Length: 120
Image (tube, rainbow, N blue to C red; front, side, top):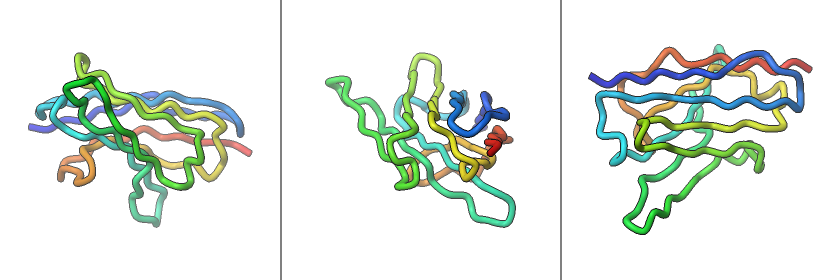
């Protein structure tokens, strides 16, 4: 079955950085576009960033939500079945639980997420 395990969250001050990791199992990872999503209590989960599968020439494409504004970078390591989210210049508005899943259509199964808290 699909298992997604997120890690790397924590408490940081405004302007700080975090690197999130998500290890996936139960899917053919290298054939899946992957994404990061986030959710705050009382709000719907929203898309943060996506990365495509790697093409034959090694190229991949990345897509970011408008609110990222060049602060985050998504990457993947197919050998490790892991997708990363490097987050820089964090703002209090980035406080949320962050999840990974396939993209653009997430699977029904979600991991436990990793909490990111940015203090002002």
